[in-house]
Length: 505
Image (cartoon, rainbow, N blue to C red; front, side, top):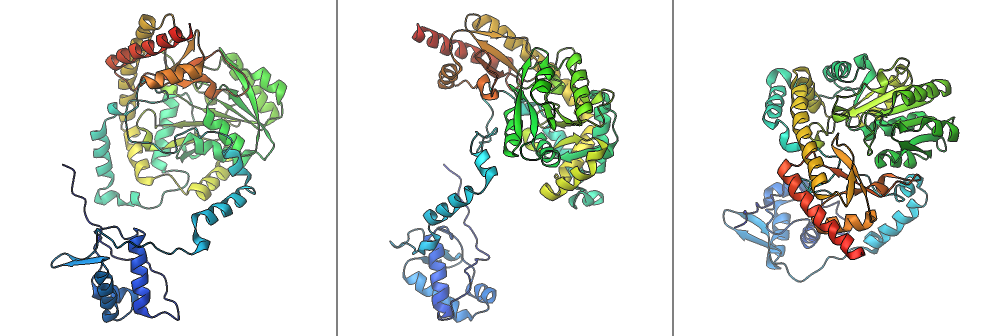
């Protein structure tokens, strides 16, 4: 039996000003009737009493009572003793008259004409969004990549910290927050980066933002003009490419191999580029780190050309089984040339929506101004809770715990691949949150469609490439799934692809 739906109680309803030639009673009747038949006032809604509505609009109570009485006699309202006046659940057969100028078609035509003059909208329409525009609050199904396991997060502890921040002595956290971020959180992030990423930086050079996407967007606005060349990893993170494209920059696709970004190719194709995007610790999605030789070459080019390197600290907590590599930003000379951006969402939970940007000194003031203008500030209460979560060591404890769990799941994934997929797909050594598996005998589109029909999610590697094609492959995640879930899904995966091979033969 479903839950009983509570009735909507209407406290205020904007009806617009009455026409000079229209009586107040008729104006109120027409306004309420239109609201009812267009479902602005849902069936069963409880309307204000006549005295309340008369006071709200500054009209006589008798005027309201007369309008209510007419709507009641026509079947739009019902009145029951003790439950007030409500919108009838069964309405007369009538439809509202909407003026032609307000029809959806007319509005749509106006929007189309405006689109023609809006380059940003045009650029956005040329590519699929990197994130779903509508998502359900559901757990992912195997083997959806780029996800952690939210079931492992210490929700009870987070709730306790939240309640503590709402105590009487800490209510100032409900006030506005500096656009640069809560000082306590900036200090906590600085301490974390010094230990975990080898980056020693003043808290004043750290700005708290909503996402790495936002940090890159602000850097593109501040550092590039339409037509400027920017380097982008190919294959690479599609969200970064689309921000570059939407900004009007000339995106230069720089290939990636087993050592990461091919810096020499970027220098040859666009030596005067204004910005270079790189996931140096663990490439997204291939998983390779940027080699020491290429790190040095990248910094040398940026120093000589005056460019900024945007370092996306993607998956750094899980970048290799031997432990995380120091960030590119930690190298000598990187302080003035590298923006390091990272987020806590994958380690903790996606809806946290807190990230940070470590900025060169000359970029701090304009970046903070831009953040203030475009987003005001990230959620101050959540920042305060995260500062305590970091400062008290809970974050490090959580990371150590889930590293062990994800390592066991990575081993389970490797074992399942060897057991079920040897003649179908080649899987490299597993690390991070996901892995690339090279398809042996069929194309990505066919594989993805067959797997989807079997209830398996995987992303085609072609989604991440633009100019430099790769051998057909799938990007697969294992972190959100237990070892048993991985094994069962691997068997369904094998059955679906074996059916594909049999069909092709």
